[in-house]
Structures are given as structure tokens and as C-alpha cells.
Amino acid sequence: MKYSIELLFLLNVCLFAHPHMFIDTEMEVRLSNDNLEGIEITWHFDPMFTAAICADFDTNGNDHFNNEETASVFSNAFSNLQSSEYFTFVNIDGQVYSPERIEEFSVFVEDGALAYRFFCPFNIAIPEGVFRVAIYDSTFYCDILYKEGLPITITGPGNETAQFEIEQNSDISISYGGNVSVSRDGGSYSGTAFPQQLVVYLNCN
Image (cartoon, rainbow, N blue to C red; front, side):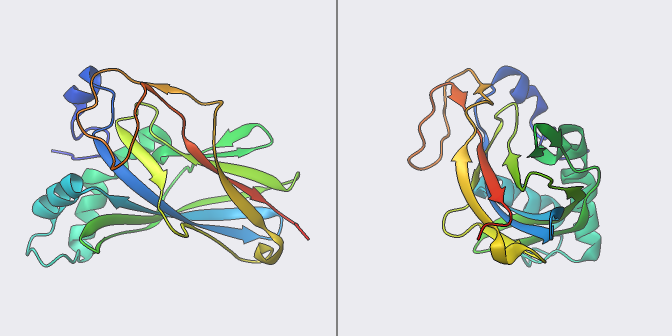
């Protein structure tokens, strides 16, 4: 049986669209001057998903995933997200791109929380010098925010003059119903969610 994030509780998703899973995101944006080379994404998961994946795939219970275990996690608990475009959307001059494939997938436990790390190659020109990255689940089954602290790193040629900010994308509204039985600490749920997005400005002097 596959345990992809979208399919893990498929029947529940049909009935309850409010969040059941919480993901904190870190990103390394890799530039090549005026091109977006790609984005390395790290997802940190909540205790329930951590426990489920570790129980099913960390066969010796040592909080370390060897190559075989990592391949099993990828096949059974990640790869199906291709159908949801890996929750990753890059907006360049009004055109939206999602990763066609994933590279460098790894899974590990950090500070007691399961994490996925993977690279999304793009190699797209940024002619106007600005682009946006939003990571969200359109069903709001997963509540995805940027990790507290310093979640964004920009690397590669051109990073020296790049600046960024994180904002709410008010143009994308995600409606969900049902009573919220599980929430983030301090979270407020109104029935409509708006994803966070990273805005990167190139060539800022």
C-alpha cells in the first residue's frame, strides 16, 4: 500500500478539508545570474506523520534511513505528490511553473521530527528580475508554512544582489469546511486559507 501524503488518509480528505498535517518549509533558492536554476526544499513534519513514517519505513528503529529505506519512502510516501505538482508553484511574469521531476531526495530525523529534502530543477530565465514561490496544498489537508527563524537561503551566481521577502498571497484562497479539531499552536482557522509565498528580487543594488 502506498502512503503518499495525499493518499495516506484519502477518505478523510473527501469528508474533511481542514488541516490534518503540518509542514514547516525551508528553501535554498539556487540562482545562475538571471536564471532560476532550481530550489532545494526541506519539509519538517508534525509528530503524527513522523511517527507513522518511522514506524513503517525505519525498519531497525534507529532514526536513520539507509538507501533502501529512503527508496521505499520515496516510492510509497512521496512520489505520488507528482500528481499535485509537489505542492510547489513558481510564478514568473504571471506564468506558473511546477517541477517536472525531483532530484536528490533524502529523508532524515532532525530534533525528533521527520524531514524530507529534495531538489526541484527549473532552469528558467527571469527576464523581469522578480519571481515568486508558493508552496501549498490546494485541499488544505496539509497546512504548510515557512519554518520560523531563517528559512530562506539564496545561493549561486547573482545571490549577492538578490533580496527577498515572504508575504501572503491573497490572490489564492483555499476554502475548507468542517470543524478544526487539530491546529497549529497559536493557529487561527477561519475556513479560508491563503498560502505564504516567497518573492525574490534579482539585481538589487
